Image (cartoon, rainbow, N blue to C red):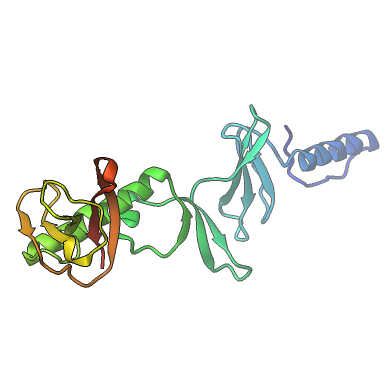
Length: 218
């Protein structure tokens, strides 16, 4: 650890040699020390040994810019959270950091970023339970975006769906909310046009008949 004022004064040969060695020591150690150098210059480096942060002086010589964290235990360099990714013109194109949960849940953010699996799950859950389901409930109509449809292969009798691909044997049951209340028994009705996502399948014994649960997403 060494710091210097980077000013070589007139002095004897022995003192000059000591002064030069001190300057070189400061240079090779990136002006390291527990506190900032007393004499600063634009674009100079300082390794803060208290915080283990490598810093650089700004062009105006009035503030320090954090460059990165040096993990002295693992002997590794760490990128700081919320570090912007930019192009060569300085325009931000991404972010190395985890953005606010609300940004992921609303789905309105356009900045590329690192994100935890938990926030991805929260964003998906938010869209399914809030946007899709509540919109459908407000519409009071089975078949709206956000409602579920259970398509069953009824076969010859209600108790034994049978294993047939006949379109006439498909029946539609609409489910209007996540608590499975207000189940609409729409036997024989036509499934509403739209985009549906398969959520699961229920088989009827060894016949591989039964039904599939669908969620309308668009």
